[in-house]
Amino acid sequence: MNKFELDKVMECFGFEKSDNYKINGCNYYHSGKYFTIVNGKTPYELALLIRKKYDNDIYKIRVNGNHESEFPRGDVYEYHIDTIEGLVAFILETQEYYKSQGLYQDLDQVLNLIYSKILRDVRPNISVYDWMLERENRRDYFKTLLSSKTYFDFQLRKRIESFDNAVNPFANNLDVNDSIFITRGYGYCSDNWFSLVDKESDIVLSTIRSLDGFVIKLHIPTEKPFEINVYHYFDKNGEEIAFERYDESGLTRIEYNLTKSMFGEHYGEKHIVTLADKKYIIQNLDKCISLINDVIKRNIVITTNHSRTLKKNK
Image 1 (spheres, helix red, strand yellow):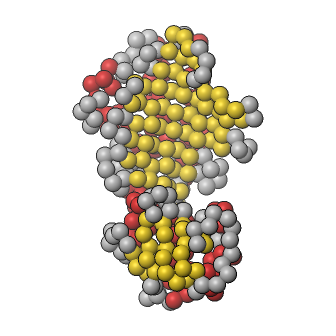
Image 2 (cartoon, one colour; image 1 turned 180 degrees about the horizontal axis):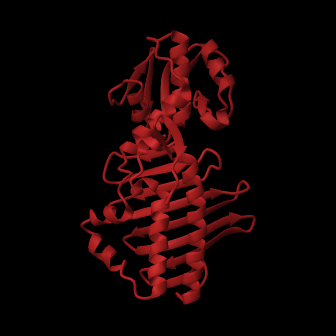
Image 3 (cartoon, helix red, strand yellow; image 1 turned 180 degrees about the vertical axis):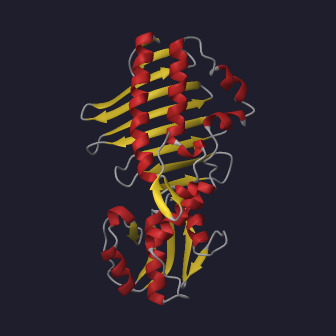
């Protein structure tokens, strides 16, 4: 959890942005790393209830900052909370314990509100193309990469654009309020990012933007600890598509540098891209786009005449 996410949580509970939030005698503030610190007395009875009710491997509510699954042995005077879900659960249970102003709400309702607030503040409706046009130092170079030389170059560029817009469905003018994705994000400057997590599969769709470019990423967890990652990125070194796979053999990474027209394994020899290589990339991007569209159908919902129906990706 970063500071931006902490502030979005507190905004949903009615607090104005601050470096230190006070709730029921405790101070809540960001560590500067990846967690929120809760400093102040949490009675043993409440601490024990929270520890039993919320799986520490999921919610990451750490007693005294301990990384192990420690049970409280008495009143707790410091927590480290790594996740949005853990922080919301902690606040709701604290409010219920103290009966604070009747603010107790349903956990899922609060989380859905926070996810929407995060999305609204990270400019999700901007496409990769529009983002790059805003980069005065990169846009001319970026435009030169979009010119298609052959039929397969044209087909490949269409797949890349489809992949980018699938990973960020809001670039297709979908409403953030229709999303039921778990959302993570950062949005306090021109560098911003957000990730959409599918609750069913833990597939992650990430859009990361910087002054120099962007990273579009699909993360597919397989049998743990294995995973597949697909990237499209553009930075000061140019544009690239990459396919990664982690399995019992280690890491395999196939890269296509569009700027240099080079193709091959990351740690192996590379060669000038061939027609067969472009077909390989198109086929794999098609598989990714199909998978992402299935995820989108599960997580983008619209309201029509007070009924909720799935919005299909065209």
